[in-house]
Amino acid sequence: MKSVGYLKTLGSVVAMVVACNVYAQASDATATGTTAAPAASAQSAKKANSQLGRKVRGALAKAQGIDVSSIAVRARGGAVTLTGSVPDQGQIDKAGEIAKGVAGVSSVSNKLSVEQQ
Image (cartoon, rainbow, N blue to C red):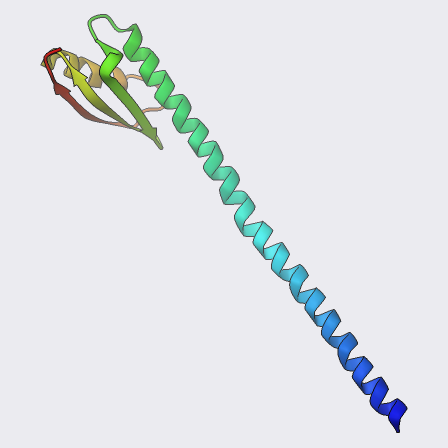
């Protein structure tokens, strides 16, 4: 009788260990499947945004008549935001037009202001 009780207990313990291992493996597969792809996607989007920002900044730097020393460029998904200050209104308009002309830019939010330097 003792051996039957012992075998029942041993069988229950084995069943619990197997069930826990199967559950842990299923949880790991789900976790790696859902978090790995968005992390890689977010990293590639950040890289693309950074490259677009550099392209716009480079185009502004090459343009004649624009002081880029106080202009910050931020890109997110093709939308570019220009912030900072320039000496006159003409530079604000010109900076916006140049940014719109860069490949990959879908929209420009021109938040530049005029500030005498």
